[in-house]
Image (cartoon, rainbow, N blue to C red; front, side):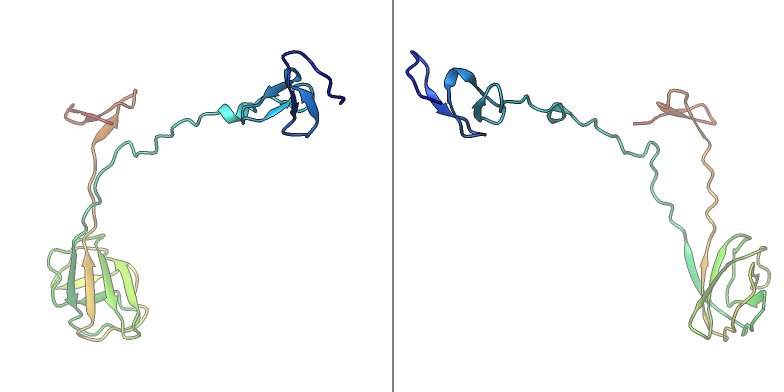
Length: 171
């Protein structure tokens, strides 16, 4: 471009292409560049204005973890492979569906359920012993958690209704 005098206009260099231009034929961009209005200028992309929508990831009904009581005892009489009934030193209060873990002679733990309430410290296992367990082997007992929650969620998902008709607000 031949730089001739133009009253009230300046000669500038485009920040993108480097050509000499009059200031009246250039524009500022959104990122503060001074560029040619006809060739180098482009509008800001619409994706620059997208705003994220907050995502509420909170759990609607939160309760603390239930504490599962665990007890320890030992095998009273040695158990052999395929036994489904074993005798413990103490099996007071165990019920059907409680869990029992028996330390076997091979070093593994045999976790299984109890099929019926205990009698005379004898326990009937849901699955047979895969290996033998000597007398005095460690046994872990866990009570089955059988809590039921009698709540109905309202149609607006704003509150819970107990079986007694009490409303509990869900935040």
